[in-house]
Amino acid sequence: MNIILLGPPGAGKGTQAARLEADRGMVQLSTGDMLRAAVKAGTPVGLQAKSVMEAGELVSDAIVSALIGERLDQGTGNGAIFDGYPRTAAQADALDKLLAEREATLDFVIELAVDEDALVERIVGRFTCANCGAGYHDKFKQPKVADTCDVCGHHEFKRRPDDNEETVRTRMTEYRAKTAPILPGYEARGLVYRVDGMADIAHVTQAIEDILDRK
Image 1 (tube, rainbow, N blue to C red):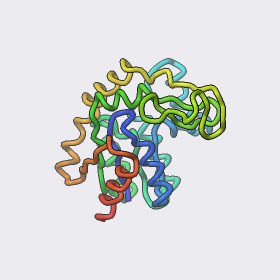
Image 2 (cartoon, rainbow, N blue to C red):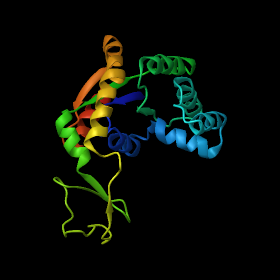
Image 3 (tube, rainbow, N blue to C red):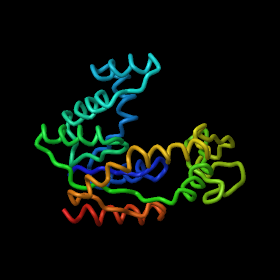
């Protein structure tokens, strides 16, 4: 089974992909993680991407698609979860070709629908333990004891530098402009299902499982 998880940054795609990996033996294909791994491993596509990034340029659709193809050829267990790809119409076309070349099909496109203002609040308020990485939130999940990690007892916390309102809203705008327009094409093929990405994690997981069980 091959599925795409769509949604703006912070919608919970990574969390749900990890759950599908654990529960169904699928493989999460996150282009950002794959790019870093390919560069580190020195694969042909990784070396190509490294030279582009070192020149301060954006990695092209062609390189990203080659990276996906390289990973698909390594096997994907019980299926692939495309997380963060495709981001553009060109990448959507490339994915269709990559799958067709391997006699595979795309089964579901699941969009995690979100409320923009609520998502900004969710992202801007999050922070983690600097020692063990346990996650917290200013409003939704404070440590039980102030300034003390519930998990390891550490007293230092950190926030991602890009977890600020301006950056989050810029990413949302980019998602609407570049990624959302690929949905109509998938809708015409009857592949699109929407899940409330603002529900709690367990409810989102169950909703996705219900969709996948249709196959």
